[in-house]
Image (cartoon, rainbow, N blue to C red; front, side, top):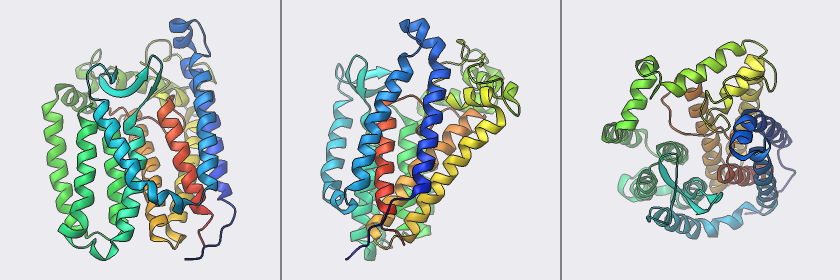
Amino acid sequence: MAKTRSVPDLWMIAATIGILAIGVVMVYSASAVAAFHDYGDSYYYVKRQVVFGALGVVAMFVTMNVDYTRWRKWAVPGLLICFGLLVIVLIPGVGVWRGGARSWLGIGSLVIQPSEFTKLAMILFLAKFLSERQNHITHFTKGLLPPLAILGAAFGLIMLQPDLGTGMVMIGASLLAIYVSGARLAHLGGLALLGVAGLGALIAAAPYRLQRITAFLDPWQDPLGAGYQSIQSLYAIGPGGLVGLGLGMSRQKYNYLPEPQTDFIFSILAEELGFIGGSLLILLFLLLIWRGMRTAITITDPFGSLLATGIVGIFAIQVLINVGVVIGMLPITGVTLPLVSYGGSSLTLLLTALGLLLNLSRYSR
């Protein structure tokens, strides 16, 4: 099928640059105190963020300029490689423990998180699989069950680490792509009920997850334990008010809010830049998501449309969960804020995915 290629979506590029810039500034502001205390270098985290951001931008430039249809042939091999890495990371002595999960591979501070790359690999695979079997998607056993089985296997391996947050993002974005491909709502509704029951079993099986639920409902039941992060996050957001305390003036980053440069970086942003700063960042995310969905709707290629839908789903779900956790509307899950939170694998992967989305925008009507 002939395709007319144009310039990538400039609004999407502008939103990406804006979010990245805010992320670099806030990583430095949120981490400077802890970095100086732990490493004797206030710039320790932000320097690494800039390096990974630069690598991500290079990857974004590549995926933005290589015809997206070329990635179709890598959908199956890429997912198989990710499955292999998910198995390897579980081997004692090989996988690296951090934050109560064996989710990383590497040596010392040079590590990658296979589950992050699995999110994009799964979306790429589903876009290929579903676009080639559109006539069967309304049939449960022929069309819906095979991709769900593969998705469930990947989720199971991620849960063995365990990493519920990343697994939930992958499941949510994948189900969005499956729904858009034409799956019957009755099938997905029944599966959703089973999923809720399974999630309840996962929560009940791990005491720390149950503690997070009870802390979410009432963090003051355990203010120095399970509810500590939620309370300190709200202590950061509250004093921020309309315009904030000023950039660099956060009080919660002084060892009150644990690792403020990662999951709770939005709390520090709201404390220092206030409601206006937080709203500006959310508006940039909404702009990025809107332009991404516009691409998914207007591109005529089913593979490209499903790929764009899944990538946008990853961003939208991560933003929703992270901000929901920070403001106390959702239980703590360990999901980072896209392009803003400190983290090498996540930042590089998301910029790579954005490059694919920008590539797709070249072919939208």
